[in-house]
Length: 82
Image 1 (tube, rainbow, N blue to C red):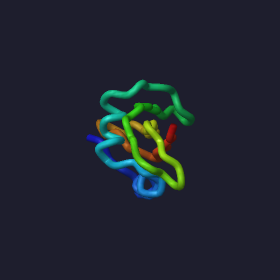
Image 2: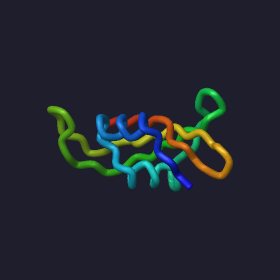
Image 3: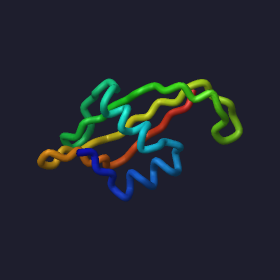
């Protein structure tokens, strides 16, 4: 099961990622090792909208996940626009 930490939910809201974006990144994205034995995922998604004062065609959603028992705990989420 995918569980979202309070910190991750705050970061998602501030950075423009939805729970669906994060779940897709974990399910479909490229895996990479992260600090403290965690796993990162990255997935480029079409965006075609404005973020801040700029227009962007794509965004990359990159959740960082800790595994605890059978749960995937999303500890933070990075979002990059390009």
